[in-house]
Length: 418
Image 1 (cartoon, rainbow, N blue to C red):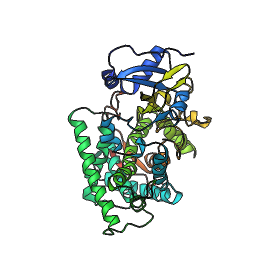
Image 2: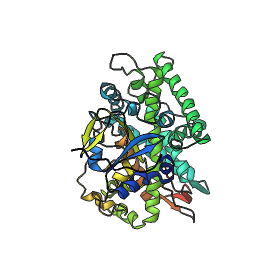
Image 3: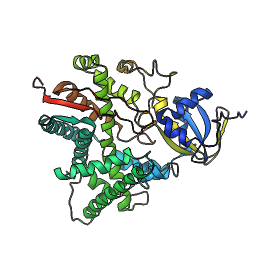
Image 4: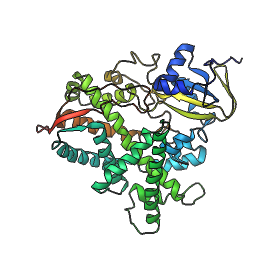
């Protein structure tokens, strides 16, 4: 029997989406007392979903597709044209295979060694400075790591420029007006740089070692056995670089959690496994990406509600990670919840849900976890610093959200006992 899907009354809710940010779907889901409802965004009908059961349906490739689902403004800033996030079926599997091919133990260990080396260099640099803006510094640290990892170490003078280009892709994705156009411009500039590297690799003008990301991606073949076009390869190389720089958001919230919950530092120093729980709780508790989009692939019915082919559908990532039916005291920061958490790829989805290889779960999730753990070790055990008076608040209508002060640190020194 078909039920009438709960409806968010009103002509259009695009302004509400901008004003409420991460809480947009949660607020309406609570008001309508439903994990699925219909609304209108940018003048079009859209379905919003929240929770584990909704995520399971959303990640069913027979019911939903990614092609043409992401708004053009996201494609032009965050994802890039023809990126893996916008593909389905065999094409998606082939591209995901390319991304996962560099997630081997050797590749990841190399990335983690580079991260440690960069932290060592950064502490030396910061100790000579009166103060730092942690968010800005950590973006540059991660940008240096990312480029070394793909096989193209940046000259020191280029780090700020490339950091600005990569960070603008996730900092301006939800922006309107001049900031949005700035994000598009920076993406275009960055893509041109990477395209040239790929072309030079194929023309043998530059010889990157065969085990590097740049070499492997440059010679990856599509489902027809042809080399991917240079533009697409550049987009996917950026899909390796940009998310590593975006870990800076999680690291700012890791530091904020240490500042606001001082007892956590003692636990991190006392228990070996605690860092794993801590980084997972940072990813669950703090805002990162609010929701993801897909389109209904074929007409289907779920829980008595009709889903019509072609309807834009949003899955609430932040809200699902704060679902009170799955998480006890979801608004409380409590890493110890992960000591007994059994885990579901659909109830904990800070970087997407489902399967890494076949589905749309973020290919670099393991990178995020390990870079966070390495960085946490430096923040807790390997450096000392003072946190002056500042505005550490963050807004839930800023996407992405970061503490307003970008976290100012002073009197940074190396902890000699480690």
